[in-house]
Length: 415
View 1 (cartoon, rainbow, N blue to C red):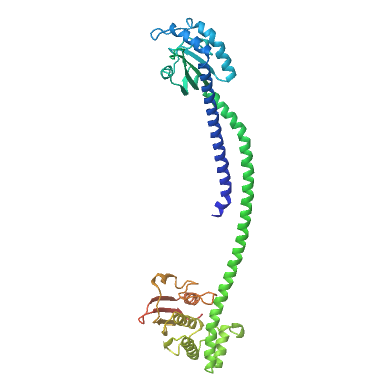
View 2: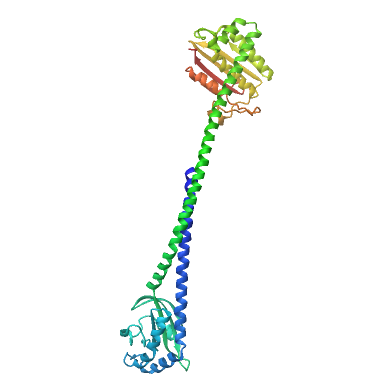
C-alpha cells in the first residue's frame, strides 16, 4: 500500500496526460477530416451548379453512347472550355484533383492529361442516377477522400458529374503537422505534472517516515508497558504470599521468601533453598482469603510437606485466581511431588473456555473478562505457560468434572 501511494500520483499523471493527448489527437484528426469532407463537397457542388459547366457537359453528352463512349479527341472542345476552370479551382481550393465527366463517366477534365477521355474506374452509377456521394475510394492516384455531385442539364436530366478529391496521404500529413504542434505542449504538461507528483510523493514519503518513527516509539512504549504489567502481576502474587506468612506470624519464613525473591538481600540469592511447608500453608490461606472476597470457595488437596518454590506458587495461584475472576464459585487445587517433579491440577465450576479460544488461551493479551481498569488483561495465563515451559514442563486444558475448566500441569524443580 505504501508503494502504491508513492507511485500512484505518477501513474495517474502519465495516464491523464496520455489520455488527454490521445483525445486531443483524435479530435484534431476528426476535425481535419470533417473540414476536408465539407470542403470537397462544397467545391464539387459549386462547380456542378455553374452554368459554364452545365452548358459544356450538356453539349458533350450526345458525343458518346453506352456502347461507344466518347474519347479525348471527341471531348476536346469541352475539355478546352472546362480544364482551365478546373485547374483554377484545384489550386485555389487546395484539392488534389477536379474531374468533370459526361453522362457515361468519361473524364472531360483531369490533372493528368493521360486520364482525360478515360472512364472513371470507381463507382459512378448512383451519382449519374442523381445521388451525391462523399467517401474514400481508391483510384489511379491512390486512396482519396472525394465528393461526387451530379451535373443536371437544362431539361432536368443528369448529363454528367463533378468529382473533387484530396489524397488520404495529404490528410495524414495535416494530422501529423497537428501532432507536431501539440507534442511540445503535451511534453511540457507531462514534465510539470511529473514534477508536481514527485513533490507530492516526497511529501507522502516524509509523512510515512514520521509515521514509522512514531510507530516505533509507540511499539517501544507498548513493550515497556507490557513488561511493567507483568511485573506488577507477579509482584501482586508475591505480596499475597508475604501477607499470608506475616499473618501467620512466620517472620523467619517471610524473610527467607523475600530473600529468594530479591537475591540482593541474600548472600546466595536463594539458590538451593527448599521452601518450608509453612510457605505452602501461608500461600493457600492468602489465596483462600483473596478468592473468598470474590465469593469463590477454594478447596485444596496438597501435601503440606511439598517444598514448593515461587514458580510453583505462581502457577497454581494464577490459575486459581483466573478461575475466580471468570465467575467460578468453587475452585479445587491439587499438588504432588513425583520423582522430583511437581504435578498439579486446578479445576473450577465456572463457565469454562470457549472451544474456539482453546488454541489462544495462553496468548498474552487474551482474556474472556472485560478490562474495566483499562490497563490490560490476559497476563496470568501467559505467565503460567512461560513458567511451566521454562522448567521443562507441560500444561493442558480440558473440561472439568465440576463443569468448568481444568488445567493439568507438571514442571521440574527450581534450578
